[in-house]
Image (cartoon, rainbow, N blue to C red; front, side, top):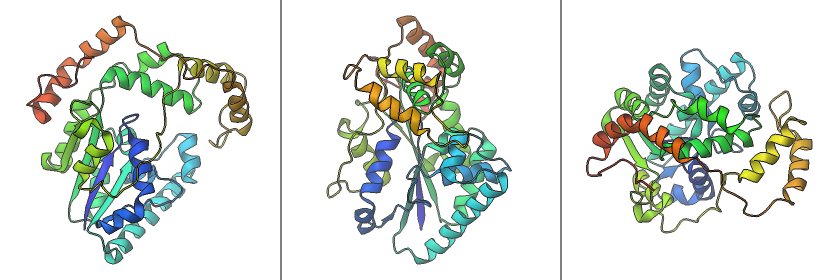
Amino acid sequence: MKAVIHIGTPKSGTTTIQSFLSLNRTALQDQGIRYQPFDPRNIAQLELGLAGLVGVGEMAGAANKKHALGAHTRAEQEAYVARFDAMLAEGVNSWPEGVYLGSSEQVHSWLSTRPRVQALHDFLKRHFESVHYIVYYRPQEEFMLSTYSERIKRGEILTFDEHYQQRLEAMDFHRKAKIWTRVAGRENLTVRLLDRTELKNGDLLDDFCAAAGIDRGPLQDPPRMNVSLSAEEIDLYLKLGRRIPARRSNGGPNPVFFGLLKLMKMRLPNPGSRLRLSQAQIAEIRALNAESNERLRADFFPERETLFSQR
């Protein structure tokens, strides 16, 4: 049995892909593909990223992730990975499908160093004959905006300028891709661009299915998922969050916060204003990433004049 793992970079259609896989889980089995989240309630498959962390003696530290895992201590997280390990060991001996397919945003977010990537790869190689990885990258200026929206949704209280300064020099996609190729081999990493000029039929799911060896024809489409917040919604999250925490001390969502948020959002304009970068910010982001993007283009997209279409 072989494994195909989608490395879900934040805000690159990961939730859409995971919803698609979950919706079509039974139909995928008919195609010889096993999509089997360890916790059926958690289609984001935190177990994949956690296996890499635990493999180097580390643990997930964010309260909301501990809550999602139901594992708050190092020992609990180690036991969580051990149970996942046992599930895979049993599964490869009983599943009739030839492919195990996984998708997790935490693989990209948590496994930012070569030792962590190596730990996950070694973990998977114990169970599967081969492991292939798929990753999507989007233009850094879009990545900057969408990851801010995601942080606000999680309940973080910070201005966009604070987010911008924190992330400005942390968007080197080539460096991350090289880590994966050094660990798994160039032939085992498929890099795709969240760019309509590159996606098959200009569609993310068509493109992902082609990359993962899925026949999309008989499968259902999920609803649009995880839409970025409008500028007005972000302002509301921040104003409310400064008075009422979005999360409880255990990392779980605060129902008071989200109940009030739902009521207050009814007064906001729909669809609202898009958060935008200034031309100076766009220029700064592109300049900082020009060299690494050119290296990524040369390594994976030599036929393209530029890595991303300039819009």
